Each structure stands twice: as C-alpha cells, then as structure tokens.
Length: 124
Image (tube, rainbow, N blue to C red; front, side, top):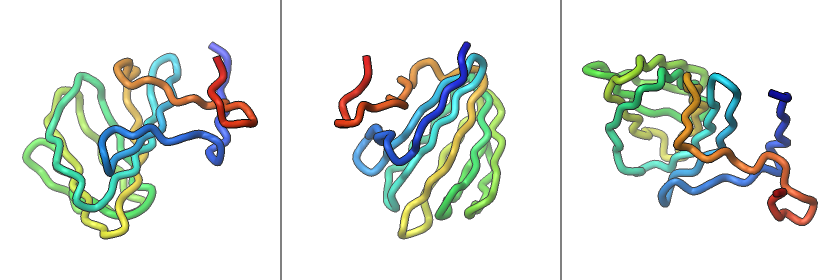
C-alpha cells in the first residue's frame, strides 16, 4: 500500500445525519475518522467488532462505554473495546470534534475524497 496525504483545507466533510459530519481515511489495518457533531445531536448507542480509540479534538462530550460514563474535554482519550455498547453525547454548546481510530478497518465507512481537483470535483 502506498502512503496517503490529505490537505485538510481541501477535503470535504461527509454528512452522516443533520448535525453530524465525518472525514474518513483507511490504512491497511485501521481507519481514522474525524467526526464533527453539533450540540443536541441525538444519542446513538451502538457497538461494533472494531476496537476504537477516540481523541477529543475540541469541545466536550459525555462518553458512555458499557456501564461507565466519562466526562471528556479537549485532549482526552477514550478506549472502547470491541463489541462494547457506547455513545457520545455532546455537552459543549459549540459542538464536539473527535478523531476515532478503528482496528480493523471500518469497511462500511466510505473513504473521503482526499485529493479533490482544483475546481473541487472528485478525482476518479
């Protein structure tokens, strides 16, 4: 696999649902997903087979992992074992941005277009 580079100023966010956007990059054995979530975004308790590490880039949220809830802020990390129910509830009125690392690859998440052309159209 060749290396990848993305100029963040050119990569477009992909809307998950109103109030939730992501940028996704896949490696051979892991995925990185930058999530931007607004205050009031609905809770989404879920689990998946991937192990997940979440880094709070900005804002704050209450991160529930199994039976525990962590009050997270910018700079905090949360580790979520595979097949564990979890949820992030945004507590900052300005929203929350988090970087999620998944292993293995989160194949159901399409990779973002990392290299848009000068006019903003996607490369094929």
